[in-house]
Amino acid sequence: MQPSTEIQKQPMKENWRTLLDKGVFHFFKDIVKISLFHPSWWRATFFLLISQIQSARKRLASQKKGIMVPPFMILSVTDKCNLKCAGCYAKALHPAKKESLKTERLVELLSEAHKLGVSSVLLAGGEPLTRPDLLSMTRKFPSLGFALFTNGTLLDEEKVRELRHHRHVVPIISLEGHKTATDARRGSGVYDACKSAIALCKKNSLLFGCSVTVDRENFSETINSTWISAMYSEGCRFFVFVEYVPVDNSASAKAITIEQRTRLATTAAALHRQYNALFIVFPGDEAEYGGCLAAGRGFIHINASGDLEPCPFAPFSDRSLAQGSLENALRSPLFEKIRNGHASLRETEGGCALWREREWVASLVDAEKSPLHPSCP
Image 1 (cartoon, rainbow, N blue to C red):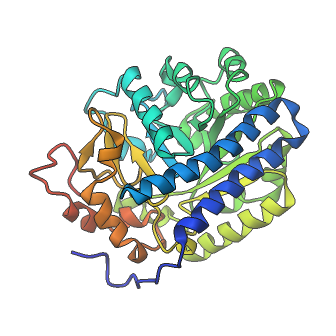
Image 2 (cartoon, one colour; image 1 turned 30 degrees about the horizontal axis):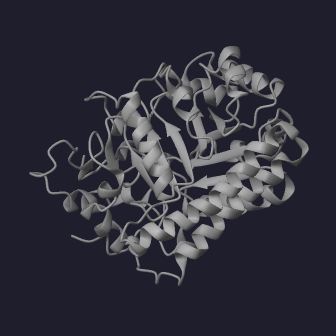
């Protein structure tokens, strides 16, 4: 089985890896630029830029050994969450069936990822701050950039004060735009809790950002210049727009249209020119790099129990990291097959191309050899 025939293959541009490494370098360079008016950020952001140069060299060395190491690793450190958000893909695609990885194992994986050339780790969940050991782990890796994706409700004064000593950890607070949309999806009072967390971050001079799940209903609101300007004035310097991925057919009408995807990308680029901030769209336009960046081309996902997955939206795996090395796991035959078809996996309506082509991805997994991974819903 191959990806849908209506998806036309696009030729991969030459030197996509060089283009990607340059893009990652400019990403960290922009972070240094953002910090220019904030002396408390200088040391950490400059250190991360230098570390990124070293990480790119490590990735090249790994590639010469036949190991595709991505610059970004998405690490879901827990399945637990203190909220019950409507349409949560993490709960729908990653039900908590097994125990989360222990602290020692997570530290081992982070150490190996750093040695192999991973530049940045996106901490996800569940709610990462339900783990009391989280910041004790990140403290061990000052040359890794950590984006802490949090619902904001546990980001209290004590945690914010602690983060002042972890400048390489950037909280990314999840919102749905304004209060009505946020509370409707995440629960009554969540918006006010997020705003309190944002005020604490600004008061303590933290580098922080916000994350918005963009769908057809909140599209105009979340890319509105008035809202962006208000968030910027409150100290937000990272804006992450995550395209809504419907976890079942009943929610497919909420996914943004092709026209909205194009507008989102152009608006993010325009906002980046207007503000001294980063505007990131995920999955974003991957065509520049020849197709889908999952499965190790640009990023990987490790779920809470240690299964290595091509993408958070594609819960399929043939390798577990509960034991064994990350280096060996990255040699995954599943990942190799997905990378071989990456040019066919282009984003259209519905966000993640791998999720849209999940029947094809599921067919690549040998069910008898990988019984612990879900079959295609």
